[in-house]
Image (cartoon, rainbow, N blue to C red; front, top):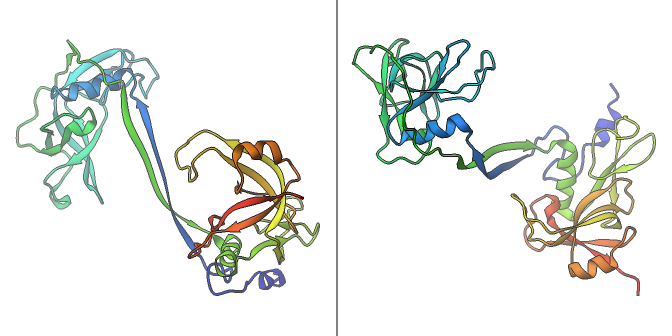
Length: 323
């Protein structure tokens, strides 16, 4: 193994990414609110929970009954049009413990598939497959599956398991406000880690040089995009450069950190061969439309205060116009 490149990549500084062996981590979150379209069968299932009724659907081909009600059979793909009322009790076919409580796989009487929901007031050690459970309903309906608070152990014997056709269905709940949230940890690795270390400690922008084509890659990466060989040298680049392409952002979107309108640009810093994407500021958007073109020179404007060690430590790039 050639250790020369690896040795050169062990960078200077005491912060993020000082050596390839360190693993600085960024705590991130993706959060996306949206409107969920429930679908024909599920919209009725949700609506009927307010009436303390559980709705399933039966496949006309294989006769399977599933809960919640579905539009198509998972087993044979047949369209499901028969909506049924299903008993609000059944038996456990499996269970597990999570950070949010105990979840059970519940085979409601008269159904062919398991319904997963929370088990209430139970200890995992006290559960066994085959135990009877019954639904506990919420005091106030909200139009979600949590209108069933959960299922509790039930001493009543199994009923006849009969289902019945749904009559006089409630008005369907065709849309639900929803929110996706994902918390994650992202490891910078030695290359982005070293870049962010230099930005945080000395406002220093660094790239990695390809030993074959000698292009300097910013942001730095382990392998050259063109030659597919490992980069082996760190290079300081300037905080000035030229715009290669730009857009005016007018639309608002989830996760946006700047209020539109603003200028977004691809910038090649002096000494680099690749494009860095950042915002252009210090100029009115209308003026930017008139004056900024590919080839316009720019320089970094740094944020005041404690650095975070990210590209956001650069407030924006301001255009440099010749007098």
